[in-house]
Length: 296
Image (cartoon, rainbow, N blue to C red):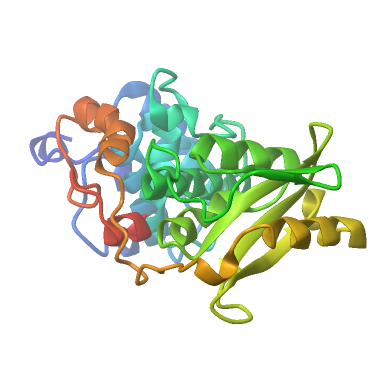
């Protein structure tokens, strides 16, 4: 016991088999409550033990003790096939779930609770990462050049989706994947529009060039949950598109990976975490980059 205390190694680790310790031991919680709870969720086999310890340690380091207990329970209940390195993002999602005054919290659709299953948590974390990518790709300012102008044709209104708020609202209302288009929009590969009739959302339209040549055209036109649109909606969209002088329109795409991420948004999301931890982790740097975002 004295030796464990001197080495800052939690005494509860003695219950794990030797095969568990395949790498140096990272700091782990060791308070009385944690010891009592973790004893109920120890790995049932030496085969699972190494990844169990790595995962619990990662979540404890990034989030907190209760999240580590939850991770330990889920690993024993139904061992997920997930790289422990990916658990950093899960830990961040858990941490921000309990920080209501932060931008990171505001971007979460479904927040962590100790009773949720890991599969649900992973889906919620992925959705959160998509929102983060959308915001840091586009920043807080509206897209300045939407290529086309709003208009009305045959009773259908064509409304630009030129901000993160507009895109997220349309995605929720139409139950589609618009939130994933941040990278695409930032590199000027397409533009998004909402098609409405008497104020009611009818369809989501994506305009892009170089599908059938250099001129902008209709890349996608779909209703709620990506249902097919009737011919009259397609006809209205084509008529609206051709009210513009497409011949004089020149769309310049950015090379993939060359559009910078928005630094103020990146810092606004992560600053509360950095301050709480009193450090800026190497894997969550001060300056945004596609490499750091993709690593999450």
